[in-house]
Image (cartoon, rainbow over all chains, first blue to last red; front, side, top):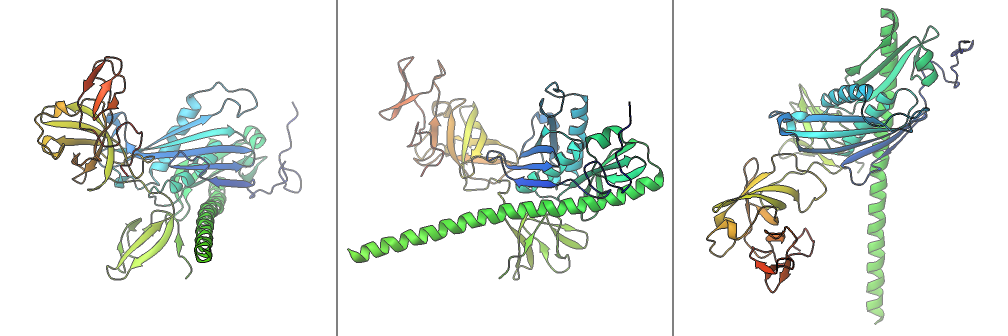
Length: 262
Length: 190
């Protein structure tokens, strides 16, 4: 089989991006009304929805920690999210991802404020195109902030790797499958504290540190987008409230006029 | 004045300057924001706090109205499970939800036996009279009491008929300490 050329002579990748460029990201905060906090994110062709419930009494009770809250994460891929139909339900991969994301989020949340409780995070992948665990974690971070859960910082995540011998950020499916290495990380953008790091393939020490720096910068960019999304949602709500107030005043004025006429 | 909007992790002040208040936490020598909202300072108390833009996890305190389900009823007290707070029914409660209702707090009249007033699985509107972790409730007053109850024999919902509850299936009445709006399906008493 002929090997696909993933990076051309000019250094452009198959979708025309440079080595440090991210795919376009679109974030919508609070798409689910019944959840305490939720977020929908489109990252390239990845489509992920995350919801947060709690803090609530931990069930089963033996899981309760008398000193802090536990974060339970459930990462799930829809059967239609990949090219070939995926058998629905949990599998080895999704169990592993649920565990690592849950542990990453637990380190971002101020768990000591809610002893004996649990925070439930559900991540549903609607369309997958490499880097879904990073997409899911980024969405979960926003959903937690939307649920008003106290955190040290909003976690942001991004994957990177080595493709055709070059270090690149935010791999897409072809690069992930045909590339030499894959390194997803999640950090707290302000302190650059690492919450999650996994590596597939081989990287030299120099390459590893180079990639880590690039990913940290990418995560900071993502963090800005997360904040903007939260702010947009808040402004929308504020506009609605203002509209209601002005409408209320208008109707009041009309009533007063009517009374005066009478 | 322009709002000072902060996100989780933003540094607000130095720890020597202000005390950490609602929505903030002390991180070594700094006070940082823990939630998304507007930063405010109380100059009198020298305290930093955040006015949230999102709905925060609820907390039950003295004076709140709650909806509970009876779990176990003994002659002297009923053991209940809090389902939700009346004001915020959608948000789950982030602490212990077991509560106690003592015989002296059932109603303004003299109560001889709690088992005559409440039965397991009754849905009750009650008022909190002590802060968590040990939650004590009261159902004194006409707005408090059972808002939905089930027949002890056939488990069908009881219907209100002339100030008593009646099971259409078993053709017999049952006694409960009822809320004035029994069976209307409302959580709030107002």
